[in-house]
Length: 97
Image 1 (cartoon, rainbow, N blue to C red):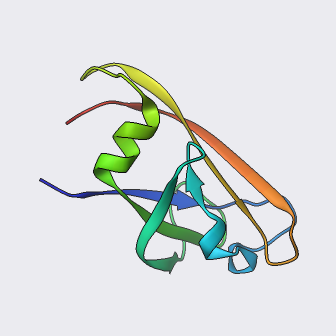
Image 2 (image 1 turned 45 degrees about the vertical axis):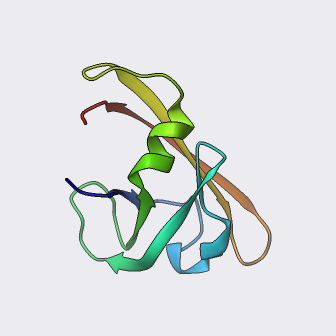
């Protein structure tokens, strides 16, 4: 079983993903990224570059609170750009374990 959850960050209104302060990224306000972030070109969801990050699977599930397999949940990724501007993105995911 994968011990990490992968997320893509892109389409930051008027800013490039290369402007993100990588240490500021959090999943649901608590789980920090792990490993190395990567730039992804021409991804089917985003125009331009996207930033691929990983979160520890256990920390990601803990940040959601009590959830059941098959349930949907909203995940929120927050962070700051290197100039201090905050960003936030949301998506709905289906829980699988």
